Length: 210
Length: 237
Image (cartoon, rainbow over all chains, first blue to last red; front, side):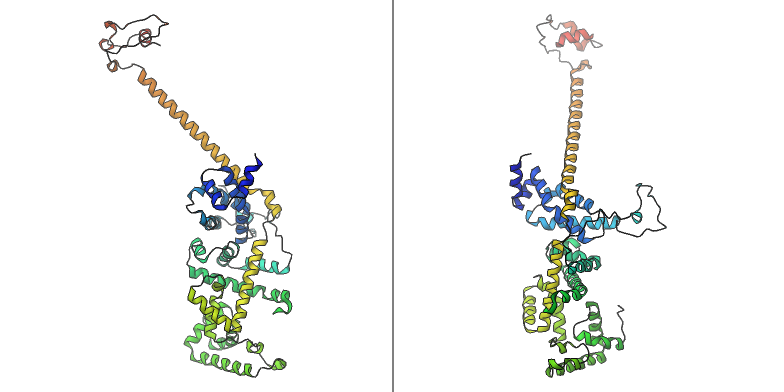
């Protein structure tokens, strides 16, 4: 493993990196995966912070990205394209099963006879696996986190796609299979709710600025 | 919240409605009700009128005597409730730069002139910034990711699939060549006498005794295939 070629890839422009990946350049594909790992992970986490299987989903997203990279016709739309993969997989996972921190149901059978694993309701959260939050130094951040978690799912999705991924209303509408008007109103209402929830702590922080 | 409120219930909401302190849902319910209820509409007009008077006579030193939560007390008065409600619903998109040109200009002009809406704009902007900062800087515990090494697992998975593909295509190639070879051998084997060209001569290896095909060995005249050793002598193997 030569060190020099890898440095070249580290400094490569995204467009060129994508083109090389599409031409079966293995090192380029590796670099592309590395560059987007954090963003994928972060997006999935904020879409549903209580999932315990985020690394598995993140891995699947990156794998699909690598497999389908040749289908990307315009490298300029890479971010939008990747977010489509993330959100589609997120929706799929929502539909299939929710591995959340649930309470155990007395009625649920202990073992799923087909897969041989306990049903999701029986999964005890492995607290070691839950990603820890850093940089929650301020109390305000903690309240923001809680406020975002309390948002209805559709609101949370648009907030994450806009504020974290910086996608346009049009792109968000296409990814969520809704209209631009719906995205606009969901964002406005989501921000309104967040504002309400953090208002008391905001005044506290800002002191006499209000 | 129940969509259908009585006039008494609506009247209790008119004051915060006027101050634009209601939630979006509540605001919508009250707006719809007022459109169809002259009584409540009248009540709202009274509040407007009253707060206008209060603002004119507002003296900060006396604010503890002023009852209620009328924002006029704090010197913030929505210019026009309908226009301010419209602007409020567009503030989020305005901040994102997602409004069409003319609407952007209208909102901008209104925000410049309406102190109340300017405050609203600042609140929405602040919320958006705080949310973005939090989302961008939180989680992705570097240590966690380093432990998981997701990208290494992905690359390994791709390699496994690629090598499986190579094995499969090699196997397919081998099978293909084997089948081809089998058919070729079938073609070379003179099982059918009819297929032989009687004019064909063959050259036989010189390290073996030379034999020339004689009339006796014209295969088309034979009823059965010649003995193996004759065939091998004829065809040089």
